[in-house]
Every structure is written in C-alpha cells, then in structure tokens.
Image (cartoon, rainbow, N blue to C red; front, side):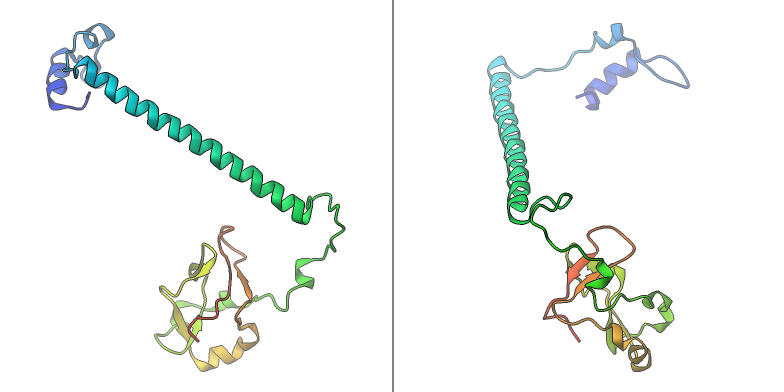
Length: 175
C-alpha cells in the first residue's frame, strides 16, 4: 500500500529533508487509505489463518520426515561416529580403483565438438551427469588419460566444488 500512487502523493506532501528524505511518525499517522469492509477483512484473515496453519503443518511434517530419515539410517547402519555395528573402516583411497589427478591440465583449446566425451566439473551436478555443454577430446588426449575412463556404475565426484558435485555414472551416457 505504501508504494501505491495515491499514498505516494500523500506522503510527498509530508516528506522533509533534502539529502535524506523522511516522514515523521506524526505525519505518517495522518495518511489515509481505503480499507475493505469489515466482512471482507474477516474473510481475508480466515484465508491467511488457514494458510498459516497449512504452513505450520508442513513444517512439522518436514521435521518428522527428517527425524524418520535419521532414525531409519541409524537403525540400518548405526551411528557413524561410534560404529556400534562394527562396520569395517577403511581409507577412501583403499576402496577406489583410481583417483584422477590429471584432468586439470586440459585447457579449452584441447576441447573439440566431436570425439570422446570429457566430463568436467560443470557436468557433475545434483547427483547426475549432465550432457549439457559436454565437450570432447581427440584420440591422442583420450589415450593419454584412458586409464581414468569411467564406466557405468562408477562413482564420479569432484575434488573441487560443493557436495552436490557427485554422481553415479549412468548407463545411458553417450560414449
């Protein structure tokens, strides 16, 4: 309402100051604006109350779902800190077949429109491997880094970026 043209015209009559324009609290109380009839105000208030009740119920449901997810995880796997189920603990490097340490050497001039698909950090997002803006490399570069090729079912993660930069290599990825 304060930004409506009719109220702005009223405000401009009471505003003071040149570099920092303001309206006093007393003059603010002199502003007038139309109000809907009381019955309409009550109808609007009921709608807003219902919306607020739905919002609160949704928040409680989300909290319950979070608690259920956490308790289900703990029931299935136990607390990862105390490891009450005695799961074997191993270093990440001991359970992976390779950690790619050479792709950062590739520059834009190595990319081409056809050839072998090359997955960049920007392609790994929100648990999937995106083919949008996919680039390709030639046979020479591919053969140099062939031992780092990924296959269906491989876990692909980026050492740089956020936690959502992790995905499982899909079977339908173009090769």
